[in-house]
Image (cartoon, rainbow, N blue to C red):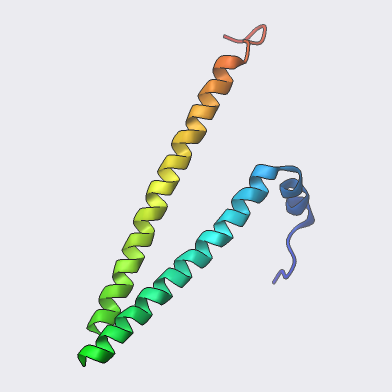
Length: 102
C-alpha cells in the first residue's frame, strides 16, 4: 500500500498549472457533493421527524440530491468539454502547417 504519491506524478502536476487546477477542482466538487447529500438527508430527517413518518422523506430527499448532483456534474462536464474542443480548434486554425504535413 502506498501512502505517498509517486514523485514523477507530483513533478508533472507541479509543472502543469491546468493539471493542478483540475485536481483541486475535483476535490472541491467531491466535498460539495458530500455536503449537499448530507444537507438534504438532514432536511428529510427533519421533515420525517415533524411529520411523524418513517424514513420516506429522508430517502426521497437523498435521492433528489444525488440525482441533482449527477445532472449538475453532467452539464458541467459537457460545458467544459465543449470549451476545450473550441480551444483546440482555434489552436489548430492558428498554427501554420508544418512542412511535410497535410
